[in-house]
Length: 561
Image 1 (cartoon, one colour):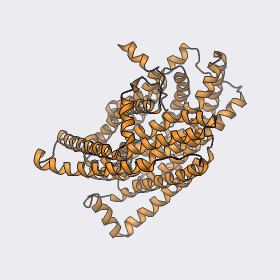
Image 2: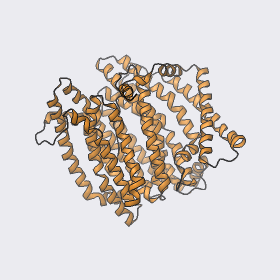
Image 3: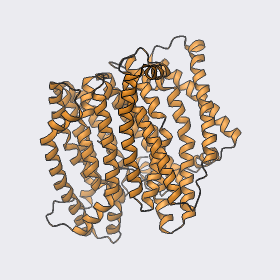
Image 4: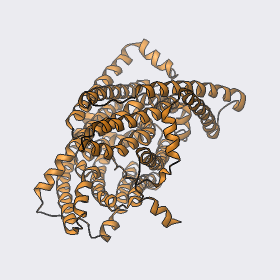
């Protein structure tokens, strides 16, 4: 039984949808554990100072991880490893890994040492909302978490080998073990060491993330060693290839840093609300947007290399249509069922009703841009497949600047114009809740992503104008079905509340109410799609009948701590 399961992981994929569905399933399993982690955070600490400090402490290490550890990205290193393994040159592979390992350690050590020394000034500048004692805790926790980029960076280096050797099961365990370490920190280390124990849990998870892959390299005698003599040509090529991804991730994490900086000056718990709701909306983004963009990438690269621009655009269009097909219904259901989702996943212990209301409103505002966020991932991959890294980076910089600018503007408008504040609070039914200004941050984030996808779509059509995307029909069909689905789900909530539950008090009742309303909405949406003659619905049905679980999968590496 176990051997049969392990053999499944080595099957080659035969189509975009099969690979995307398999990636989506793997992402879903990983996300479940992440949601359990967030539920423990919400239950144990609530939306308050402890969780605010924990999330704030990640920002500097995360920025370093994005800026330096992208140098050892799986996406970048795999072609180099494959090229050397094809000739069965074990020594060449080991030399290459040792060179990359050595340069990474030196650069990371220098950057981390600088961050360690200047941590009090950096955290004090960006997180002015914390008190003096809290600032000291934030500095200590930030310095401790600086070890994580080391561990996860080396783990990414190992991951390039485990994937090339097709040890996908081992590689897929890494993010699961990372979350296991964090959960262990919450349950067992926090009671002993306080908030620093949460940091120890993160380091334990990072060590497990690395350690699970070490035996694979040791067995094949590919464990890298520190080397003073490196092949400068290889290092230069790796750095050149990793630069676009590094810039893109760095801009993203810097934007997130600024948003949390703004949140730190708001009511205590604002950082926690923002992060927890963002994590919830990231689940469908990982299952839909990341899965399709990763699955289509090698196909696009092959067609562009062969100058088959018609098929290049055809596959972009196919992926875009299916992203839209899935994302619109999920977006609407997340908006309509936001309270049930948040209450079911986070609503326990110290995470009270007001926390739930704020997190639900933030989740709805994040979800508004779910389609845009997913399409951004696709267009960026399309540009990378074509060897054009400059355009998406410039657009991402522009959109990130717009997110920051809009966030600052909206927070001021929210505070200075009571009519606007009343409109937002009434729309999301949070009139009696304190700290509603935090809603401006996810709103700004969504506006920035909509600007981003609009700019990318325009530039993509300009740069690759030899084909058409043919997404307008799918857009209208999916949007229409999603709206009808949302109306049915919304009315079902009221009907179930009146005629079935009476009062919805327990966790099970909240979950069951949301589940039944969601299922009724989904059924109604499928009916509408059938009536409208949705070709995507037929393609999805065919894909599920083609045993997609036998697809070969390349798992995307972790992009943040």
